[in-house]
Image 1: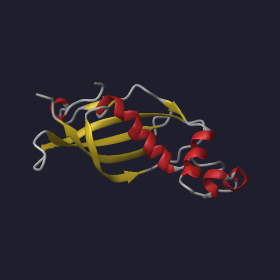
Image 2 (image 1 turned 30 degrees about the horizontal axis):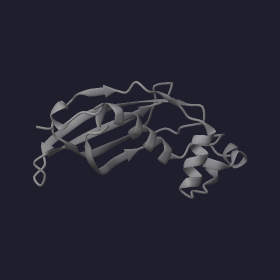
Image 3 (image 1 turned 180 degrees about the horizontal axis):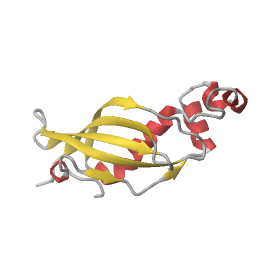
Length: 150
């Protein structure tokens, strides 16, 4: 199993995810249209070119989803019961088509589950950076994780 069990996380540990991803126009187009988001800042190059950004800005939900997705192999793949919350989501800089993004995760907290003895709760903070090492997204995620099987 690629993911880790509850007991295998250490508070304060920083996990740098090996997979990096260059954002394509199709990534942005698919996420925007699949979610019925007609925002011209994401879809209309002429409109976006006249904004302060001068170009299309990638849909922030793509950025958030990619950031969490890049963390799955190293954290929760096959060991997750459920994601319980996403909190404190911030996007301090825009992401543009052609940006190459990388992600890292810090284990902030872990505690026993009161209702599920075979599981525990882990709070992660994920951060995503562009190719210039600028922070473009971060959030906290609360995950209910399986314990090591007995």
